[in-house]
Image (cartoon, rainbow, N blue to C red; front, side):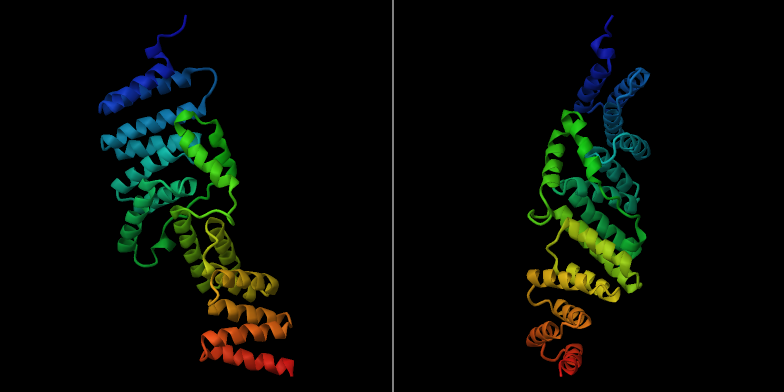
Length: 309
């Protein structure tokens, strides 16, 4: 005998949705709990459905100001199906309400990797950035947990999620099929790229050039429109004596900004190391047209001229 619709997982979930729309959040949470028990009693597992029920119950907890249980349910939802926007946003809101700003920052940033147009995440990042700067100081980014990268394999799993996530799925598919070189980065991409570039800069200051290259490369995977990121990575390649890679990065930096003095200087250094003195001299000459009194460039020109004579 088939169960009554109201006692089935689908029926209980639908009833919970209706109670939530009516503002009856405690009743909705109870209905979602019943749906979870019914689902977990079934012989076969359905992690996508279970994840949605946890996420929906988390929304009820959030509305009632129960941030602790909201976080628990969102974490359960994400353990079942990682990288889903709704539980990430709800958990971020709960963390923010509890003033756990570093954890809220991580969740908001993760959302922006999935969909850089989510207004709630963009606004949340702005709030968290201000709060973290005020509480942790100018080097706050070094004191927050690392933001997990959303893997393509996880994004592909969204194909199997129920219909309520179809909009997010379509956006993710678009991001997967459009390469970094011919797409315009979203606001979320640009913010993520900026954060990663700054992390790379801090690693350079500490002399960890290999790790810095990883950060700059990661930054460029989100937005490849920042000339300074290429010229910064070129510096790391120079230090590691990877001169051809340095030349390539400086060339890309100059394509984006024809007056990038550091790119001219670093490419000149790389060419000199490769014994391509004519190309090195050409770059230094271009640099000195932009900054005639640049001391390091004048010194490098003298060294190159000595090699040419």
